[in-house]
Amino acid sequence: MVDRNHPLPVIRQCALLDLPRSTFYHTPKPISDEELELMTLIDRCHLEHPFYGSRRIRDWLEDQGCAVNRKKVRRLMRTMDLAALYPKRNLSLANQAHKVYPYLLKNLVVERPNQVWATDITYVPMARGFVYLIAIMDWYSRKVLSWRLSNTFDTGFCVAALQDAIETYGKPEIFNTDQGSQFTSEEFVGVLKEHDIGISMDGKGRWVDNVFVERLWRSVKYEEVYLKAYGSLPEARASLGRYFAFYNERRRHQSLDRKTPDSVYYGTAARLAA
Image 1 (tube, rainbow, N blue to C red):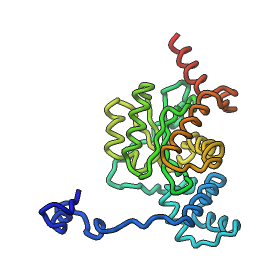
Image 2: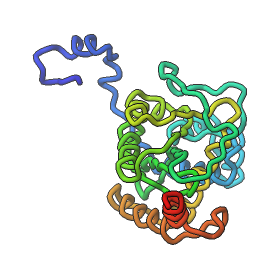
Image 3: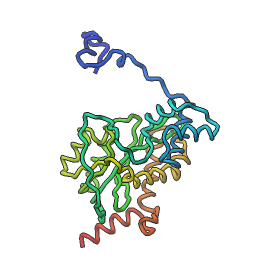
Image 4: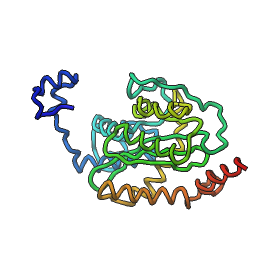
């Protein structure tokens, strides 16, 4: 951590930390209201057409009366951590230095709670600015086990959500993620290893395995986020907390034979324990 008040010159501190001085002196430019509005439109387009890449999203924006070049769309999609969902010949890794684990769910029949958990991160717009949301879901019951919000796209809030889920519900047999840098990081993987949890990561041609969490994001955004204009992070946290309680306890799912995630999660667990 570079300290301007330290007797050691800044140039020497940067050299010791292998940090370019340009990075230290750089002041991030705040995102304009125009770009925030554009990011919200991109997010809506991605929910409706998750297979759209930057070219098609650019065309979609043009149909909405918003002319913007593809380069800007790509830059904002990277900020939002959005990518088109389709089978790719070669998946690009967010961090080539991180180990990628094999996919463990091929031909696996998921038939009980805590057999497989999954997670993902999504962009959440607010009245001014945006935050990132992570949720950890039980595949069998669709129950949201834990979630966290963060205004930075780092690993810390992902690890906190994972630890909270394990402390509250025990551990799963397998934890499945994509190959994002947060999930391949030593901190995140270390928690899984510490609890002897099978680590599974989506591989080539396995984009569809995240469909359950993608459906969750669609529900969260159309039933909660897009109906609100969160004025602050605490406000967003409180409102989303109420929504996830509703989602788990009272919202029936057709895929669960019109049952709630809580009733399936706890009912199945009680039946297996009997």
